[in-house]
Image (cartoon, rainbow over all chains, first blue to last red; front, side, top):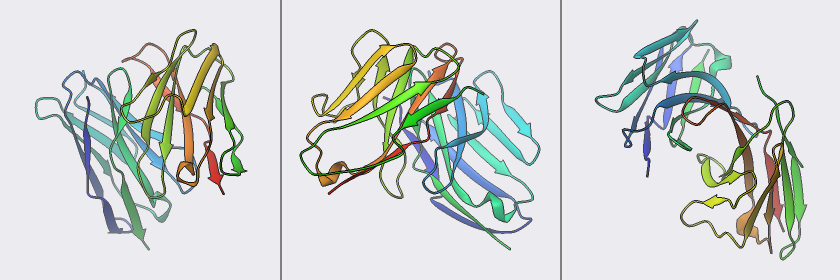
Length: 109
Length: 117
């Protein structure tokens, strides 16, 4: 089955700096790669996603890149703000969604 | 986006009792729903895939007789934790697929925090 690995597990950045979170997946059939932000005790919120026919997607301060050959995808957050602090999960989807282990992002002001 | 509602949001029960959690798609029909479990400071682990009108597909290591899933209508899936024990205490989240598998998007319920005493 699909296996998704996510790094780093924790990430601390200074406000205004960029943050990058990386994920790899094992199943070449995976074709949808969403990223979620989860605050404590709440449901995951979709922040950006990318499908297998696209290499890069950007939405304001957030961007995602996908390398299908290498089976890895990354989340890039620029100009980080304290409210970006949360747990971020990557996921890969074929007929079900498999999550990475999560990254705790702390943005220090 | 689509709305998925989950109830109850919090439940406390005694060891040995059963608890039912409901997941509803409010403004769309969901032929497929997914149930996840999340322990503190951990990721979401898929428990089972719930298909309307058929038996759920359980992930390896998930006891189907302990976690009963029923998806009797296109807008409702239920998860029943039978004979709950303290180790079943967790955050349970459902999600529903909007659109075809591989081309759709998943929407999550609010989650249900189960505490077994």
